[in-house]
Image (cartoon, rainbow, N blue to C red; front, side):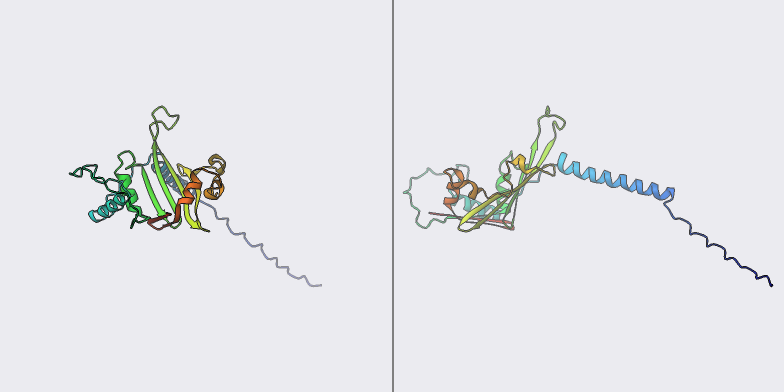
Length: 226
């Protein structure tokens, strides 16, 4: 009987496990620290320590257009110094426009004339949405954030549907954090005219006096009823 030579195949060497080297781990930690610091700085600079807004300055043509609109509403744009005595005139609505049109720049330009709000309130107009950004300075003795400036954002949907104005609070955020609906009286996304307009008061009177309202990118139009 012949002896068969048994050839045993040597087991394959398992591949070496690849892992992060100490240098890789250090790099990841460093990037995480830098990213966290960057996000923290952005959050603090935008929401905890925001800078005042730069007031909108209208050019001569824009200012003339705004003055004409305000004058048509009976608002004195000359500070009461007309240079001539006020003359009584008979009241008449004949030929009077019932439309009020303002651009976003005009609204912010009017705010710029108010020394208290010029650098602390800004208005944004987009399709069916009016947004406001307000900076609120806190008193020195306010807990934790005393002496700092608080950043408040709010949005209100404004449109016209089914023959009446539609007004909805879209939300309010404080330092970039949305305030819970319960804290806002559960009024988020509630049609305020439909909810409160059935009873005598502001919303009923408001709806009864508005013939049309439209908010689009950079513009506001309100048409009043007779």
